[in-house]
Image 1 (tube, rainbow, N blue to C red):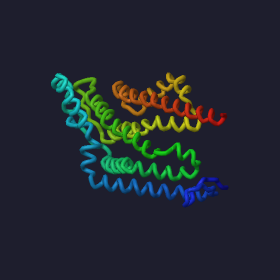
Image 2 (spheres, one colour; image 1 turned 45 degrees about the vertical axis):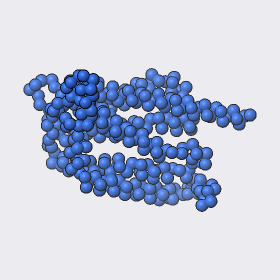
Image 3 (cartoon, rainbow, N blue to C red; image 1 turned 90 degrees about the vertical axis):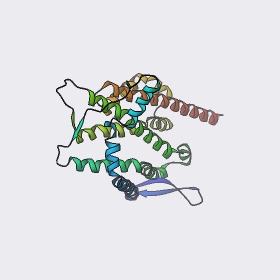
Image 4 (spheres, one colour; image 1 turned 180 degrees about the vertical axis):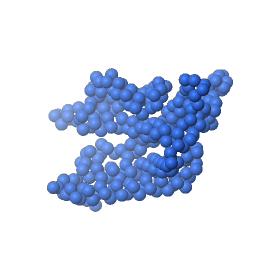
Length: 285
């Protein structure tokens, strides 16, 4: 069983190359191995600064002096609201009730930190595996894909961590049905809430790029996206409900930027549609 791929000679010209299924697996293994090494290198860096990562980054959004809370407080002072916008002490106590709870936190924080740091390299390895199957014209149209995928991923990560995470944690920490009930969180439940919020935001922000490539290969069009906007909004609300805690504020905070990204996707898909129509007109002429 063989697959035809487009390779490149040293002089820059294209040549067809036959690769068997085993050859593909071997090539994939090399890319995966280099990706694992990159994540491991990131984990080593995270391990060196583990105290800072756990205390100031992982647990940062439950500290009253978190940067987002400080900026909101400064903004409140600037507009004359005094301390009304300031966040006091977040009323939650963190504890570990599992035998391996803190060990899990240690390795989870290392892996996630390593993966985030190595993400551009990991995606670059994935792109190197896919790239030989693309034609010269397709490669020209996908120029800069590594930058844009990484940019959107890190933008989503920053949004999830600095916007979504602190608002969600503050709401969950201050919500109480009775003064007799004290919020005592386990580190496991906190991590299980944090990871979908932050990583989910990073992946959700890939929407414009995904739509762009779907438009390039003719699966979706700008007119189709506009026609089905109401269904897309429902899907966005469902996604927001999945990756956020069960509170309205967090869901609204996620829904609005995702809706904006969808509108940007419509613009990109419409532009691709116009380019295709122009190319077809030139071919006919």
